[in-house]
Image 1 (tube, rainbow, N blue to C red):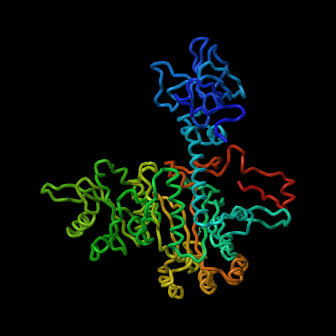
Image 2: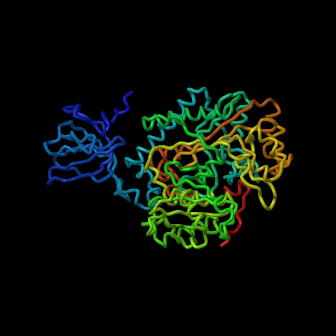
Image 3: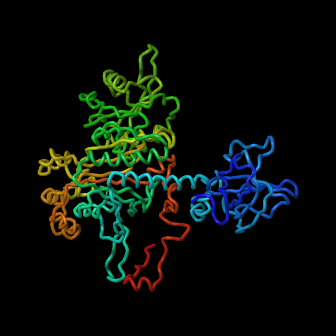
Length: 589
Ligand code: ASP
């Protein structure tokens, strides 16, 4: 069936070309613009999701913007001198028009064109159905559909089976807060909405599914950000008898088909970096590798320093080429404040200048505390040249990497749409992120079902320092500095799982109560398995050069978590509360 013609139309607005000249066509759409030429001639720009075409209505027409009309007319050449090359249909117009109004429209509350992104977000979202009429939003929604379809065909082609897992579940441990749903039939009990289908996909492996996938909606009650909504969509996958390489290959297959569908290019080989290198060189576990400003190791230069602030376990520096002239003192003060907010004790900055004798000189409030060898060492190690600005941080390794990683982004991160796609696998994440000072227990870097590296299993019985050295078989996919997704090889050995729960302070009773169904399932023959999930909202946003995932979600929430269109979240009827066995506490003011 043609995608153009329906009972009311023969063609779509954006598809008319000189080939159609002479044809009588029926078009349906919205009035994008209307211009009068005297009393008896009107030019109507008619718009549907494919674009705009100019219709010339003799005798004028009583139409306003956003009226829904059906125009029947004949396609003809535009008169000499009025061809519009900026428009795909710009060589033609529709003349001898009959106009039928299908729906009248009130004036829209904001202009439905390139000015819309500057309109207050709440107004755009309250009238999202109008916002969606814009070219950019149509492009975004259709690209997203193309991405979903490319993912499905790649996963189907690799033998994965699409399975829907439930939305009303018990809590899944992904480390965020759950959204809960009260259970009417069991007052006082609650379902959780899935933070991910993690436990179900592992059960699918025990169930002999072999390869599972789902384009899964996940819910996490965390603060909203440009790359985070309460509900988001992931490609979620799991495979049996598979290791990390198998998962990386399968996910690369899906991403490759997405990239091809959207850009026409190919993914190619995705580079890999260990978590340790990513932190050490970029100060981030999701390094934006589109630009340099890498962190440079300087610790050894200050082994015998007399400068107290540099008597630290780790010192690194970042060189911002050519930035000295444009960076004011007040900007440097702001950067220092930011560095302190990020956890640094201070930020040392140095302007690189050329001395009278032609030598390179570091101009900095701390220069007088450093020896000539130390200053030379900084210049050489950082490759500093006159005109550059250098920044140094001294602290423990984690703090130094973290602060310089954020500083690097602040100084030079390009806009999302400024460059090619830089995909990166980050591998060998630590199993534990830190040790909680209060409890002395390690904090897991991923969910507790992540398998340690075989060589590091012995360290699970070691000291807290040794625990922090345990590498896990967990891996992330990063694109242009955004974490697209993560996954791991799973623990399927009950003894290892018991030990990890024990380390995390989850007692056998606790474990049984929270994930007993999974542990029970594992007693009945669990295949070794591994999986992954990546965020489709984020991938589509980056492919389209959008800074905020809201732009690729049909009906997103605002920054504060509300939906101005439907009014959610809203109070519910007292009768409904009663039925659910709930009573509200008085609101604290
Ligand atoms: N469930 C994990 C997540 O949603 C992904 C995985 O480990 O497969 O981040």
